[in-house]
Image (cartoon, rainbow, N blue to C red; front, side):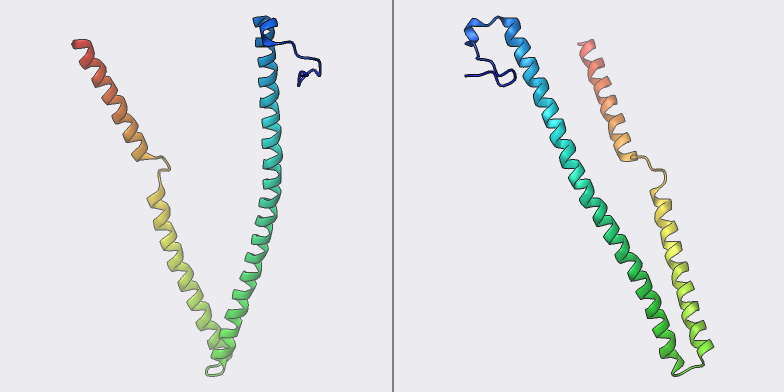
Length: 144
């Protein structure tokens, strides 16, 4: 048999000193950790490339969807123009858009105010209760 790290023949473990065995184990563990870190870096690099491409494609789809919504509004104006003057059709669509934007902004503001402050208050309260419980248990044991 050969030593995996050094390529030299391996002496039986019974012929090696404890320090040699510890040194070999340390070297092998160090090599294993370095190899695992290199593997993780390679995997994350590959996943990062895919994520970047995916985000770019998603963003491009969003831009095209935005243009599609604009075309839809233009189509609605043209449809209303069949029954009303063009200026009135455009005004109606504009008012509807601004009213919808206002409602969405108010709903968004309400959601944001519910999220503030951004601290996990339930987790903090639970941690404080745990600390109090441990303190109580220590006091109880010290009295007994």
